[in-house]
Length: 318
Image (cartoon, rainbow, N blue to C red):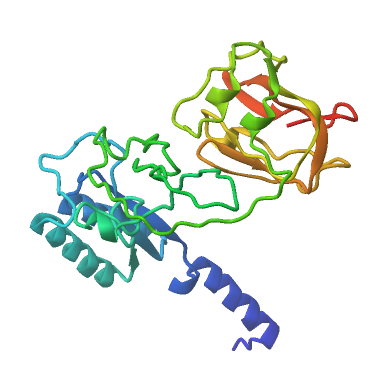
């Protein structure tokens, strides 16, 4: 007769639990239905393989990404045929003991689709700005904010992953929300009023084009050679104090890496949205601002990082 002590029993229990873990300890996987390429035969083969491989469950995710058709008949999302395949999936998953989860919508929209009226769809705030002289009555028509469908102001919708398969957004919605008037400090002057001298590593730039509020039209800054600087410099007649700065670029903001800290700047993060970059700092007093990057070459692709800031006592770089 063999007697097992507590330590040996615990060790054997751990070993058995590792060899055959409970369902709660088994991994879950994403299981994509790509562009309607779905058959019940394929569903059964996938789920039975998951069970044999020791997978505990899956999240069903209906997506597209321009995947070509490889089945005789595509099952379009929420059609009767799609629903029948989905019901078959839930019943088979339950039979095999697989935990099933689903995404809240097709693709990555999470809350949208062509069946959602534009008024009830996801929206953004847009605005226009008019500077007027205070202390007197104003009579005039304020410029209407942009009505372009896209991520920010008049920047149009972009589909880098090909999710929309070339189809233009069909919904458009605009509604006035509020008119806000507030006093600005006497020292608050627009870049156009300051009228700085502009120089650059290449190309020609005018302050009127760079400050017209049109974020969809870019001015071209020619690329520099690998290892060289590409930059635009703004030089003012006298030193100016800057408390915030937004750079609108023709590339995704991810191209701008976190900035280096120094005596004038604090924080290391620049927040961006699809071509907008906002370096974070307390304030900077300078007569020159130079925005630039160093061009690097890695794995046959160009990557960028910002040049170190703070060149002289009266200038700073981004």
